[in-house]
Amino acid sequence: MPGYVGRVLRVDLSSGRIATEEPPDNFYRMYFGGEGLVAFYLLREVPPRVDALSPDNVLVFAAGPLTGVPVGGCGRHSVGGKSPLTGAFGEGEAGGYWGAELKFSGFDAIVVQGKAEKPVYLLIRDGQAEIKDARHLWGLKTLECQEAIRGELGDPDVKVAQIGPAGERLVRFACVVNDLDAFAGRTGLGAVMGSKNLKAIACRGHRRVPLADSQAVASIAHWVRDNTPANNQDIRDLGTASSVRSLSRRGGLPTRNFQAGFFEGAGRISGEAMRDTISTGNRRSCYACPVQCKREVKVEDPYQVDPRYGGPEYETIASLGSNCGIDDLKAIAKGGEMANAYGLDTISTGSAIAFAMECFERGLISSRDTGGLELRFGNSRAMMEMVERIALRQGLGDLLAEGVARAAKKLGPPARELALHIKGQEVPMHEPRYKQGLGLGYIMSPTGADHCHNMHDSNFTGKSAYLEDMKALGILDPLPLTDLSPAKVRLLIYYTFWQHFMNCAVTCYFVIVYGLVGFDRVAELVRAVTGWNTSVWELMKVGERALNMALAFNRREGFSPADDVLPRRFFTPHPSGPLQGVTIEERAFLEARETYYQMIGWPGGNPSPARLEELGIDWVVPMIERK
Ligand code: SF4
Image 1 (cartoon, helix red, strand yellow):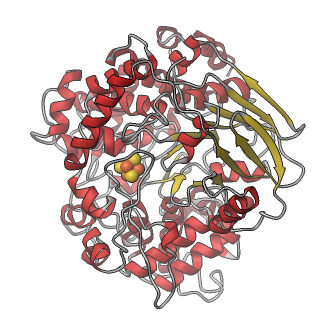
Image 2 (tube, helix red, strand yellow; image 1 turned 120 degrees about the vertical axis):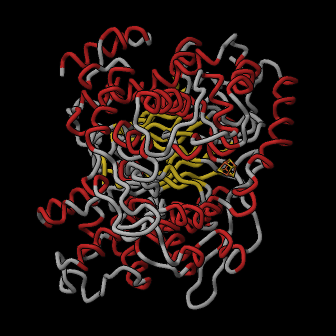
């Protein structure tokens, strides 16, 4: 079966049983890979209302048909499970090299169940899998753990996906780290891995992805190599931090726990500042990628930042930087390096610290709670200290490790106003008052606030290459940033169906979308890889199906439209700065939410059987009805 290995690895850590399944062709064509496979296994195999940290939760690692194909942007994989942070559908995609190696080693996906009695790791080599003792690895940071595994296997090319000490301690936003600088960052899947006593999955293999038409694949690979770097000039030159200054100028850079969108220190933490100060000059990359957006930084004074952990991305710079009022780039790099070493999601970590800083400044917590730390905005030492305390669950860090929603519940009602989350997941570093369609995307995401499978309004406000691309889907006119009309809802829906397809495929947003590969060329690539006579329409349906399955999972778990809400802060304007006076108009927002439900066939916010049947997933209907 071109594009796929045709084998799914099943691992039961409670019994130690390992098995292989060989799903049929149509299974792959329906659920595709990545997010689609995660949604399938979660709906089928996670018992309703189960505790996300119990052995009954299921952890899925899934590549897609394009993972490991030698084309730029085709090196990603998904990790999924019920989220311990939200209690909802948990999923994240990671770049790096691990996903491609999973397929080279002989599997499209791994489904992990149960819990090992003692720490273990899973070794997959050329189609064989074994569970190995990991007691000597437990407690190690990610660099040491990767080195130890490679050392004991005598193979420096083994690719390792793993948790750090934060995942071992069940920090609810611990991530899964692969290749030291790539992360299935969100929804706390590192804690699920920790709850199963699974320290790492190491892969090594020598098979290549079978291709239906290798000449056609090579021709698309050449196009991607020759065009996508130029179409991504900013992030190629400066990394994802290229947007820090421009976002701040427009009022869209989250600052001091989203109290403002303009940060006076933006220039000091920008991509340009990183290039001119702490960058080693080395670009880092994922499998087969010509864009190479990842940076590498090195700091030696006043503390050391190890370049082997890469460098901070935009989300890290904003969450540990501007959102904590910090303009010290070295400190941000150190905080990011520590998060990578401990295995923490930097978005939720920075958000939790910013939340605590605002609580401190408003007198809701005191230096008695912080162990003497002056936890104020701008205190970079306190930020770095808190990263470690969260990872190790020390003092106030233990409370913040539960996520801002649970922490605010414990601190009382005034703190709830300061806890910026959706369904329990901390808001990423994109200001919904600035991009209001994205705000709607936040509440409709099955994983809680998410910026990856979302739509960024700023790409569609005027004549742009992105809008030109969308014309192929019938989106013809630009729309203002603050527009929440049915036309914006339609744009959000079409765009996010495609994003969810890309999470099934599993491909990189920067290469495919910002690189302007285009819908038709992607469909051509899927045809050339799989041999299926597919179309953009079928691929959009793949994305829509995966989204509906994820949303249905949430309804099965007890989520309702009452959970599809934005924090109150976003309905009040910034007091000053470029967005002074701009707010989300609540009535328009609620109307847009209703329009969204109707457009996707979820009247009243709940899936209609007809919608699920139209998507070919009628087996999901009884799950919703039972609920
Ligand atoms: S653009 Fe960046 S994130 Fe995407 S594949 Fe390339 S290096 Fe990885």
